[in-house]
Amino acid sequence: MANYDVIVIGAGPGGYVAAIRCAQLGLKTACVEGRDTLGGTCLNVGCIPSKALLHATHQLHEAEHNFATMGLKGKSPSVDWDQMKAYKSDVVGQNTKGIEFLFKKNKIDWLKGWGSIPEAGKVKVGDEVHEAKNIIVASGSEPSSIPGVEIDENIVVSSTGALELKKIPKKLAVIGAGVIGLELGSVYARLGSEVQVIEFLDVITPGMDAEVQRNFQKLLKKQGIEFTMGAAVQKVETTKTKAKLTYKLRKDDSEHTIDADTVLVATGRKPFTDGLGLEALGVEISPRGQIKTDNQWRTNVPGIFAIGDAIDGPMLAHKAEDEGMAAAEVIAGKHGHVNYDVIPGVIYTAPEVASVGKTEDQLKEEGRAYKVGKFSFMGNARAKAVFQGDGFVKLLADKDTDRVLGCHIIGPGAGDLIHEICVAMEFGASAEDVALTCHAHPTFSEAVREAALACGSGAIHA
Image (cartoon, rainbow, N blue to C red; front, side, top):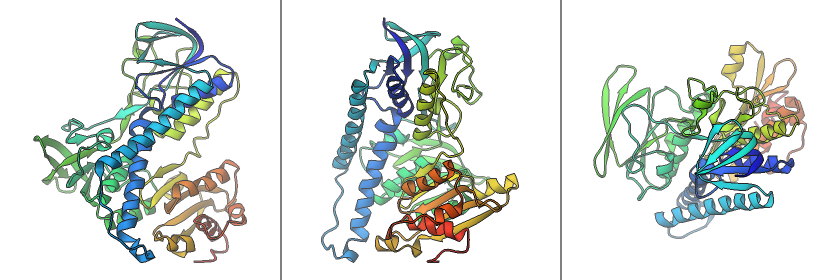
């Protein structure tokens, strides 16, 4: 048995970052992880492998559609699916080994196995019980399904199974038009699959800016992805090689079926707290299965903290990382802080979609007077040069003070461009502050400046 200042349960983005920050602050730290590799869902079967496949298939698209235009002549490449998966696995391996190195560098003990908390101040891993003054639960989340749909990770798959399909399906049905469904759907669409997305709501990517939703769906349709909206999936029946999906249209209750080689269930995720023993400890859990915490990430049981997907808020790796660092600061007697109003969200399709802050609908609901500055990437020289003129930047600012309230981008590099506005919002900047900042030419970032100019006397290139 060992004694620690902090034991972190879970080595995903929240957990491993929390462990490193604790160690940097001089706390004797251990991290419990049951997988054979560190990094959690994100690095092993989530963000990182999916980005590898998105990148590979985007290169395929460029070769098939744009190389000849640029004078790059030759036969289009063929897809070696096994090699593409090997590339993805290599990317994962490099990242997970990197975290192992960081653990050694920061003298963090990796307690290999699945953890439980038999009582406050103690963590059990296998047959061993370790003592800790503080415990951070960073156990993450797992895919959730819907009634009548059983995931077998063969024909009916979660995002995990979708990254390891034995072959590229001729027909892929995707249940859910959220981030995961659209990212992975676009991967297989570029690989030649016929992709049909079945969504219960009438809009894709719930909670996103309405104008972005509409434009994004149009662009995905142009890429060959079909959408069946307002459809409630009733059941999925499988044979050895196929699936039959039955859904009802909400508008008229009519029942329909489609056949598919693979069904991807992308209906969201739920907190993963199985086996931790939280209920027996009396840790408060919400009806949605989330661990309840105060604004310092403390649970109602002294010495036990929780962060990331296991608690309330958007299930995003970077939100978990911020909470991990903040919880570590609190444990070390410092002031931990997360600004939940400035957490960006990104969808890594082509084009990318990114947002931060308020949407127009939210500002209308609040009754807040605002102004909109919008600029199309068709007016951006760099975007046109690389066949990525689709999309726009939309900046929202307070009508009276000009303070930046939100930004919504659909276009090239949106996931990187959004952070200019995140920093601006963190500093309480006005749209004019962004507009008066010199941006290098030619860059995609000029579109952000032009949107800021459009909040004032007008964009230059519009």
